[in-house]
Image (cartoon, rainbow, N blue to C red; front, side):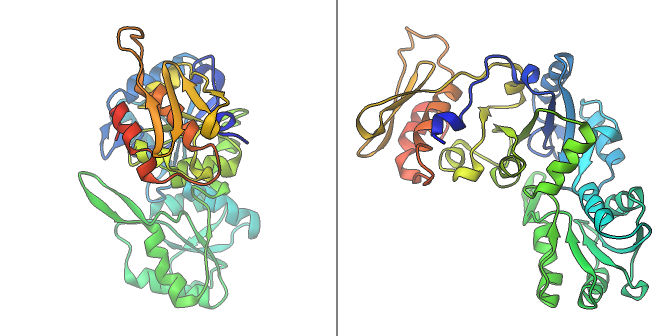
Amino acid sequence: MTSVERMQRCDRPLSESYDVALLDLDGVVYVGHRPVPGAPEALAKARAAGQRLAFVTNNASRTPSAVAALLTKVGVPATADDVVTSAQAAARLLAERLPSGSRVLVVGGMGLRHALVGQGLRPVSTAADRPAAVVQGYDPDLSYGLIAQGAQAVLTGALFVASNGDMTIPGGDGPLRPGNGALIQVIRAATGTDPIITGKPERPLHREAVMRTGAERPLVVGDRLDTDIEGAHNGGADSLLVFTGVTDALAAVTAPPAHRPTYLAADLGGLLVPHPAVHHADGPDGGSWTCGPWTARWTGDGIVLDVPDPHGDADADPYAGLRALCAAAWRTDEPVQRAAVQAALSTLGLL
């Protein structure tokens, strides 16, 4: 598959071309307890265009009702049925492997317990209950004692499942904090057992979202390459990368194949517009890649981006230039080096 084939065109707004948007939350819809600027308005317009919205999160600590309440508070009306969590994906996986009513030791919070009960399983808190499985999810109040109970149960043969493997989580206005991926290392190191992980980028959470929404043509929308975009690849779905969260333009251009999105946009307004084609023309060093007025070409020093004449094209969208640059950078499966694209990103003002 060539770079141009990876970077799809869409002649209609994405909200009219995909029946369900599977949206990540932190860094996409809100940051902490504040909406991303323009996100509530963009999502309202996408809904008005007929697109259904599902909010898909690796965070297993909150119940769907709690997530829906936060969404509503930041201006995005939602119900529990609109929310899909990694805890729900973990509970479904366990329900498919264990008899109904099986005991599951919960190393985590109410989100996991709520999901297990919904699948007909019985949450417990001690290894003495002889659980058939241990499930671990992020909980800011997680205690050493509960982790120790989980390790003891795994050592005696309990199936070990983790809601997600994110090594860090956003810290609001502060630095990143250890996530569930860091916390599961304790049980893994103590028992020598690797957990089955159900959250993004693994397939169970994507499957859960598709099953709950009945999506026929889902679009994954996220800000992280290693969870949202890789998860879309693993689930066989198209994806939209937005730059309101952790990923910047340099990371996108230098991404390996599994982290390359179908579409790029500054923010959720990208759901409301068509996405232009990237045209490839043969020539020296692989040729050139053009999107709108921007053309990217390989030279001996890296990728050069031709600057459009500001008097000749009033619509020189820098994200059209970024699409051209990504297409040139993604001409092979080998990621490009940062130095090869930094000058071009400076031209776009996106470095």
